[in-house]
Length: 175
Image (cartoon, rainbow, N blue to C red; front, top):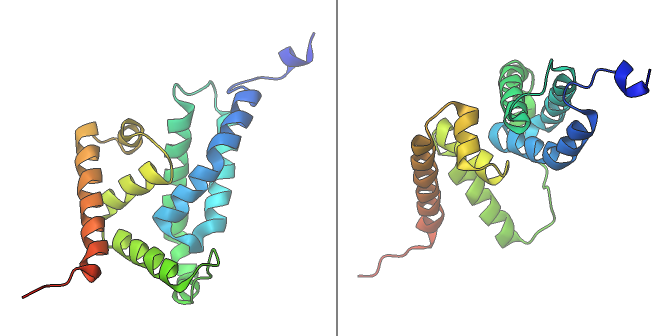
């Protein structure tokens, strides 16, 4: 009896490891983009637990990447609901800078984050999954259970809204 036959290989350990290397950082970035950087540790934990669940899954899901994103998303929503009450005081504290940049760059990053936060939750989720999760609009539609046309409309509207928000301070009216 070989070692391989003795050990069940549901997802395929090599496939899962490769998927982890390619997607785990994107998943963490997606979650922190969606729920805020104050939930970084939670995001890392949820992603790691999702990969463990993938290995334990009774058979490989048809689209492991989409299955992982849905699992991560659902677990994070549940965890954030609980963690929000505990972390309310931390959220009110100043966020640490993630990089050392000049004043103008920080203002742009802050303005972009502020514009993103003004979006409706569904549009914000589409933008975060598309840009930070590097998912196609089709994958976003599959993950959220929405029609691809709805996701496309939400993405286009969100980008237009963010663009208007970022351009507004720089436009001046001439008589």
